[in-house]
Image 1 (cartoon, helix red, strand yellow):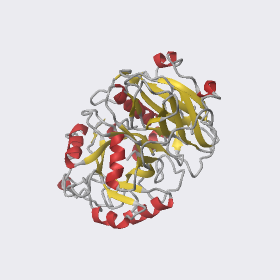
Image 2 (cartoon, helix red, strand yellow):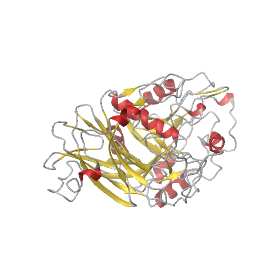
Image 3 (cartoon, helix red, strand yellow):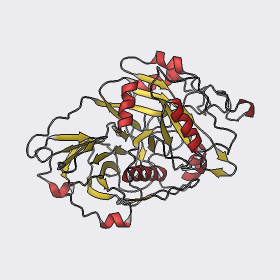
Image 4 (cartoon, helix red, strand yellow):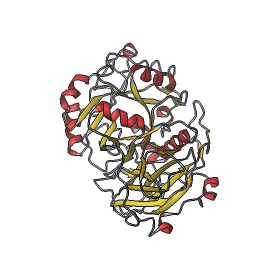
Length: 451
């Protein structure tokens, strides 16, 4: 839904140079322009953990005793949490029926997809983007509920969701787009109608409350725009997740600000889940796509769960066992004690007194632009939360850069010694060093906390 304003934003922007490959999508520095997050965080970068380079060889995954096995059963399941279909109040060009989306998703190796078509202010008329006041707040919101169930199977899950989309565009002002992924399909009220109009009269917090009341796993999509009229207004903080990587324009400044908001939530004690979504509107767009037309599955949200069942996957989402990536693999975190016995993984809270090692695994894309693996710690309370109702000001997070090293193309498996304090949050990124639009190859881990 970022298409209309991106053309203006990209005029005169440097694309960073270099070609874009088919297995990764556009990206930029996951920490924004300042890798340390703030001047204060830069000064604090010499923290009580060795950098990956300085810790070698003892920090090598191959040195010392073997890593203990994970104490939980499961695997990472890639999918797309933000996809638009033809015929359900969207600008899709007519080429994205659910059947085509399911086929393309399987082709790209996705194991699940949630359709998040806009709340129906156009009455599901695929031929127009014009709004008809006689159709406001009339639904239907889930027109493909039965069809997507037929398109699934033991190796693929498809769910009909929604993107509740209030707006104020005269003049433009934040309201917010709330992604609704039904938590339990057996009990969800598929006939619910979301009230998102008249324009300018419904806040983001109000539609968020509607989504939560309906039984949605609720995500604030593209919270910082980049355009005002699709940004979130911060009238409520009750969301389950923030979309920190939206496929439109790749990993851009708006996404970097969303990452700061997510990290701020954790600093202030709110365990918000990190997710990404392609925001695909035209299913036949091939990777790497363009700023206005991101490909399906770029980025993907990876969920760690014991099996491929939607309600089980929702459990992984709720637990924060997620990664957002366009590199073909999740970025994983695991913490071990001094003897390398496993203590916890992404989404978990680990005992600070026992934590001694952090292991980071993933994949760096084969790209002409250099990539950096960065590991961050967010101390408890380390956020000046500047988010204001109706404004697009990101918070100031004093995160600390624990480690940084070049990420050579291919698999990543590195470790570093850590000393943690209760309330700390750890996360990692693989991203270009320069904060420039339309880079490829970004991976963001979910959070791991200390208690």
